[in-house]
Image 1 (tube, rainbow, N blue to C red):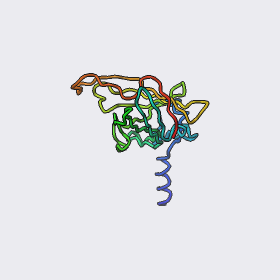
Image 2: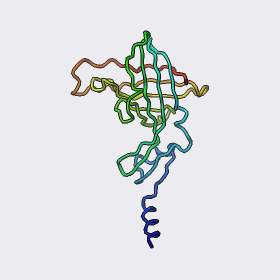
Image 3: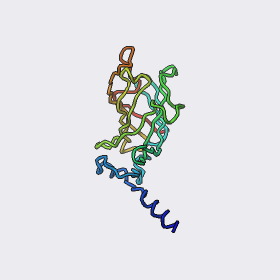
Image 4: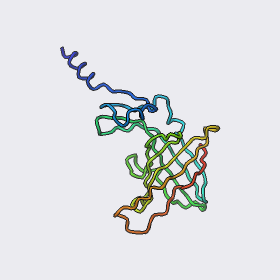
Length: 181
């Protein structure tokens, strides 16, 4: 009898696995305990270390895939997170998130795949309150999987906590090219 009760309890908590590419069909109305899983490894092509130079700054981006557990209704999502290090031409560090913990607000986190095939990530810089925020767009070159484009669409929202001038953007606001390392 105990086995039947346990089996019934477990089946009530069964997890619906939804392919990442089918996620948009749900219009954000996912069943409880759903797992939006990267079954076809769509995100894997972005994973790795990427580097490039833009406007006399050197950029290194480290992208990893992880599973985010939502506190809302037991939902799980396969996502990307991006850390970065930016230096000037002399090697001086402008910004560095490489050693920050996974829960840091300065780690760039995935949001969605755009209709264009670009991947969109949410960004807030160290001076987010003064406008250093927006969406980072990344796209793999269809002719060379070891090349990727990246650009920042600045949201630029300035919050009441800002006690200085509008922040200078450290991520490129025009497209830049990166190479897988």
